Image 1 (cartoon, helix red, strand yellow):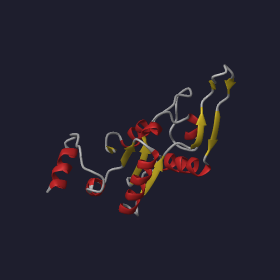
Image 2 (cartoon, one colour):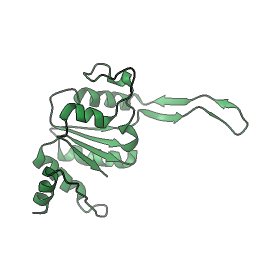
Image 3 (cartoon, rainbow, N blue to C red):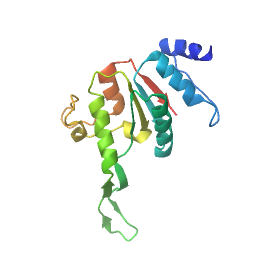
Length: 166
């Protein structure tokens, strides 16, 4: 009965809040709602660790859907700065090739007709998808503008998708 009530609220485009301690079944309830509503879903977590946990759970609930994580492709990223001695230090970054490949797979999947898309993303990765990341997809940015994941979901499905904030 509770899941049906939540479904009705979501269908009426009302915001729904699930509260509870770890292990109380919030992700299970969300999985049931995703299953009932059959809508693409963007699951947003504040950290990579929580994103990974959500991804693992969602992948088990939906083995036949495209379930993927969308996190930073950088293992290390230290922006250019001036140190305590006044010396300029160049940007230091190292890309994780597996995470870069997974990000590319997500962007390519968003460009298909699939409705079974469930993404687990960190908040920081919602913004600033570089135009070069969109190469090979049907998504285009104008004059080098950076798009965000919500823009891509809207371009693909209009308002017919769920956003879940962890």
